[in-house]
Structure formats: structure tokens, C-alpha cells
Length: 419
Image (tube, rainbow, N blue to C red; front, side, top):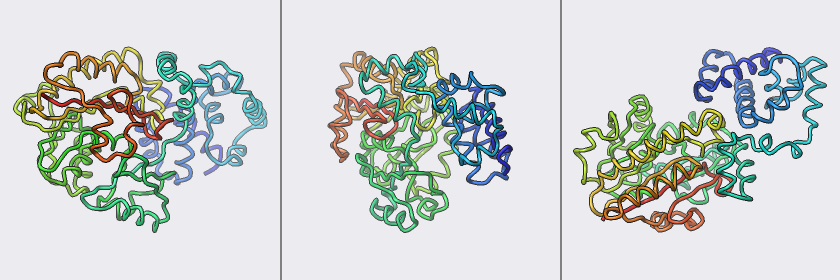
């Protein structure tokens, strides 16, 4: 493809993504379907340029003000993640001079808001919570995430999968905490490998694996994944149960549950029962009240713990949206708690960085249910599940994962046992 044509496509894609009316990954995927003639290298350049602009949007918009022409084109130049010589071939002499000038700007001397590239409503609570660790967090959020895999222990062993990946030329290292995980740098075409198509592995962040491990589902139990979505944690729970017992995957979205079906077929699990519910008070939930051994509530949340993968989330969320989510989170947790039988375990989790969605919700639940639910220390739950170095993963009684500390997405989890 001619350099000018690729730069024009990058500009067009940024036009669509920067409207922030849909998730960026969906827009990028739809864009590539519209332009099927694009090669792998061209798709990589377009996608990575887009995500780079989203990560550094405040800074790039500030720098772009000094240029001329279409704003999205200037942003594409600043965020370009393709071949540098290819880019220069698409630029006028004036654009080349401008780009050299703005690249020479001392970014360390710019105001904080241009260096952290977060909206102030998000930067302020994170800075207050982390202190000197705020800037290491910012640096980690502005880097792409590694690719984590969960080995399906019903079908394979971790060392066997690691060896098979090595034979395919893929270096996979064991994850530091999860006994199920492997980590790969880069983005190899896993879906073409036999070990993927036969269900030996699933793509799943190590932090997400730790939520399933903390739930500690056992053979023969009755277990509920209350907000199952596309079923990543459902499949992890089903494998932990050794394909025995009964595992309900509840979700209000039939579309999300439909995405579980091909993954479920690959996994070889037969103990999973996907169920679409109308809301958290659905009659089908009431019929199971007091009968369930384990409930995982991976609650709807802001998703701000996934900014390495979804940098558009920081621009698409708002304080008002967080307030609405908090009401929903509290209602879902209270409803899910009714499912537990005495001695059962309840786990509340999010992929958010904010205390408002995490400790605040867990603390309010503990206060309101002192008679029936006793907090279970996360370090104890993780140690029982053979997680390495569990004490390094907790804050107080709760699991607290940070990208800059643990190399995972940002996750939170609190657990209780029913009296």
C-alpha cells in the first residue's frame, strides 16, 4: 500500500474512534472488516497507532495544536507505530519539519495532566491512593499488556503446553502467581495452533485467573458465576471443578453468553449451564437461594483496570457513570449473596482501580450483613488455592492487583463465608 493511503486510513480510523460512541476494539475490528485487503503489517500499524493516540491523547492534542491541517492526521503522525521511513514518504516537507520540532519538545517539563494522560477525575483519586507509586502506574498503563494464557487443566498440563509453544517458536514463561498461567510477549497467531483449537489453553489475564482461584471451586459442588459475560472465569471454574458438579453461568446478555458457546465446546467441559437472566432478582435465581456452595460476582464495572488493553475507557467513562455502576454493583452483590448455603463462599470482584467500586462496596456489604457473612482474608483464600506469594497480592483482607506491581490488569476481590 502507498504510504499516503495508509496514513489516510489511519486518519479515517481515528476520526471514528475519537468520537467515543463505541468501544475502540469493536471499531477497529469493524474497520478491518471493511478493508479486507489490508495485510497483517498494515493492520498492526493502524491498530497500534490508534491505541497509542488513545493512551497519550491529552499530550498529542496539546502538541498537535501547533500544526496545520486535519487534527486526526496530526494525531496519527504523533502516534505513528509503523515503519518510520514509510511515514516520511507520506509527509510533505512542512509536515516533516513540524514533526521533528514537536518530537524535540521536553515532555518532562510539561504540566502533569499532559504527562499522565488521565482525566482529572481519575488522576486525583489514584494519586491520593498511591502517592509515589502513581507515576509507575501511569507508565505501566501506557504500555501494551503481555498475552496471558490459562492452561485448561482438564485437558493439559502447564509444562506440556509450554513445551508445545516452544516447539512452535513461541516463548511462554510461567506466570509468577497463578499455577495455571503462561505469559507471552507480543501477539502470535495462537488461534492457528492445534493446542488452542483443541482447547488446551484460553487467553486470560493472570489477574482474572486469580479471581477464579480465590473462589476455589471444588469437585462436585454447586457453583454460580453470577456475571459470566463471555465466560472466561466460568471456564476456569469448570476446570477447577474437574468437570464435575454443576456450574451456572448467569448473565443478562444473551449476546455475551452466545460468545461462550464455542469456547465451552473447545474446553471439553460438560458441567456448565449458561442461563440468561432478566435482572439480579430473576425468579430462576430465587429458586436456587440457599443451595449454592460458591458464588463469584465479577460485577459490571468501569473497566479502568484494563487501560493497558482498552485505553479508550478513561475517556469514555465519567464520575456520573461510576455513581450509577456503584448502585448496580451493590444490588447485584446483595442478590447474589442470597444464593449461598451455610458455609458457602461469596467473592465480589471488579477490574477497576477505584476504591469507590471496590473497598467501598465490599465494606458496605460487610457492614450490612455482619450476622450472616464473615469476611475471608484474601491471603488465606489464595494460599488455599496454591497461589504463589499470596501476601504480596493483598491490601487488608482484599485482593488488590496493580499493573505496575504485579504485571496484571488492575483487579480487586473480596471474599466472605456464610455463617
